[in-house]
Structure formats: structure tokens, C-alpha cells
Length: 352
Image (cartoon, rainbow, N blue to C red):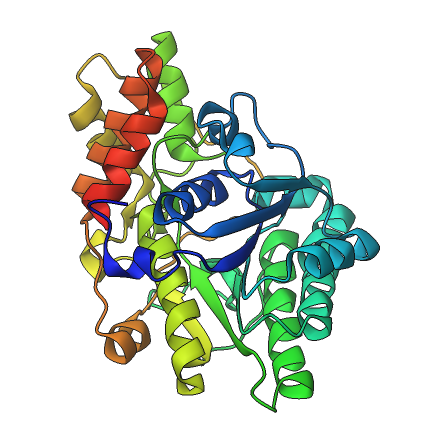
């Protein structure tokens, strides 16, 4: 635990259940919590990619890892009853926009009904005192007006993924009003921007595509170089999630919905992000623009994080250049066959 910040050390000995723990963000989060000495239970499907950070770090052997589907309410109830978590962080989802066009029913079942199941388990488990549902920056009714979204704007995502996460927000707020007005459990949602970082092997994501292309000596194809996104290092939102879980436990005035993204100057185009990747990877990395006529995706997306900053005095640790640098460092170390738990722990300690 040496070198960790007070925020992580708060979770020493605490029982925390993380849904979606086998994914990219979940793996980073669980590693940080394990380093802090937390009692971590994860509930998720098997790792969604091969390779997967969850396997690379050997997390299965360092936590209570339960393989299950959040659509399976009976199984989820059993896990809650057995582990009696104090904190619950819900990140399990079908997270890919393009996949949501291919599998809309599965996307809604997972992202909406899955949230209902998690909320129901929280309702039935007296040990849970603080809950956070992680959604997305895409929950808003995006009319491409060129201005950042604030938390009070209308929820109505366009594509099945975005819309299902909008519904997940509504489910959470309904459960909060209907069942937790007595103050037994503090409940919030976090609308996070696009995350980057080492260990992401997902399809249809720009940084994993860049790493794969660079490793194979090929050019990466960029579909929409002018799309603006709130890119941030994966550790940025994870720190915010843990902060909200802790602070709302202390005082329920902190409950609510929060945008979680970078400073405005770090909301950049996809093309600018790829140029930063090229800067840190080296000139042997090449890319080209080739629109593929795929389904609708938002062209402009920024988050106004004034509420988060004013409420908690929070600010991002890294600007986008440093975020890309850390991503490249992790990826190059992995490709070189280095011990990735050491590299991951080093980045977590530096950040916190």
C-alpha cells in the first residue's frame, strides 16, 4: 500500500462489489482496490477480449471473481447475499455503439434490465450503504449544437447503446426515489467520457486499433477524424467513482448525477488523438482516413464538468498528452514482454 493516496486507502478492509470487473476499466479499478487492501468481489461475464487485461494481471487469483450474467437475477441475488458488500460500483454493460446496432435486444437486456437487477439486489441487501451506476457521456439528446452537456439536459441517446444507458440512468433515479428515501443507501450516477489507457483490447475503439496497427507495422484506418470526444486516461474516472462512493456515504447531499470528463481543452478530435499517439509511439506509426459508411455516431460530444469540480474541488490529474503517453508506455511494455502487474502498479501509484 506504500505510495497510495488517501482516497484509495479509505477502501482498506471495505467490502466492495464491482460489476463488469473483467473488462478494461474494471480490471484497472480492481487492481487499484486490491493494492489498497479492499475486499473485492467482481461479477461479470468472462473477459470480453483475448488477450484481456484481467488475465494479463492475474486478477482472478487476487479477488473473489464471480463469472455471471447481470441478466441472471437469481445468481446475482445469491452473490449479494453471500458477500454482503458495503459499496457497489455498477459498470457491467454492452459498451460498443456499433455492436448495439447489430444486437439491440441484447444491448437493452444487459444495459437496462441488468441495471434493474443490480438495483433490486441493492434494495434487498441491507449491507449496501453506497451505490454508483456508471453510464456514459452519450446519454444526452445530442442535437449537434456544438456546446458541452450539463447534467440537467434531456436524456435520450440516439443509438441503442446510448439510449439503453439513458434508460439505465432513469432506472437508477427511480429506484433512488422509490426505495431509498429513508437514507439507507446513497445512490448516484456517473456519466463518463471516452477512456483510453493501456490494456484496452476492445474492437471499434481508436486507441486499441492504433496499438494493433503499430504492433503489426500496418496503417490504422480512421473513420471519423473530425469527431470531437472527451478523451481521458482510464484512471481519471475511476478516481472520481471512488470519490463519489466515499463522499456520498459521509453526506447524502452529494447524491446525484455527475459528468466525468477532461478539461475543455482536452476534448479533441479523433484525428488529433491519433496524432498524439503517433508523437509518443514514433514516426514508424502510420494512419489514413477512410470513412466506411457505418451507422450514425455523434460528431460532437463534450461534457461540462463544472458540477463535479465545484462540488468536490476535483480536477483532472493529467492532460490528454500525458494520458496518451501513459497509454503508449503501457502498450510498448506489454508488447516487449515486461511484467505488466509491475507496470500497472507503477502507473496507479503515480496517478493516486
